[in-house]
Amino acid sequence: MDLIQTAAAAVLLIIAFITDLKLQIIPNRLTASFFAAAFIYHTALSGMDGVASAAAGAAAGFVPLLLLHLARGIGAGDVKLFGALGAWVGVWTVLDMMLYAILYAGVIGGCLIMVNRAFGKKVAAGVTAFLVPAAGWRKRQWLQWAESGNKFPFMLAVAPAAVTVWSMIS
Image (tube, rainbow, N blue to C red; front, side, top):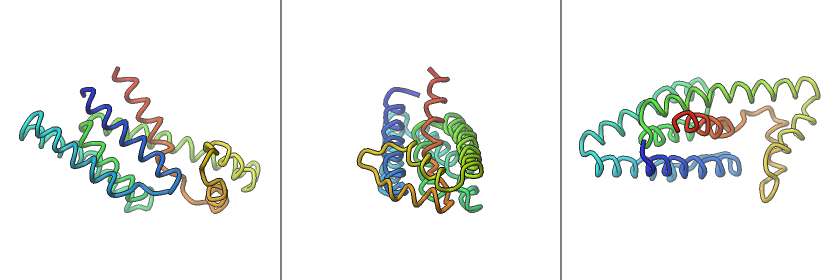
């Protein structure tokens, strides 16, 4: 994986992280534009082999998470994000990121359950609101999210997963 691929994937993840936390959505225009850019980049770099590589990475990122989405485990934006991410970083890197993201999500979910059960929903809401940077972000929306028992944004697990995988590569 070269510097351009790493930088593109990092920019994609940073924008997705911000929009997922602020708006609880990963925009289609974000994932579609990065998906298309990955195919253009790989085609320019390696021709049809690049197309095949980007397609394999996209499928590796998209298909397993589509199954998780169909089981109502994650949102559709996360599925498309991993498809675009896979097109940039390739099969094995996107699968590593997916594995670590699911592990981190389990740890985060377990912590939220323990805090919620030990201290009640009000304290869990406060802890959740404390964990999210407050400057300019919708604290009320986060408090409502924590109290409602909804799923947390998967990007809270994807970001540390990407850092983990990239730190092991370099």
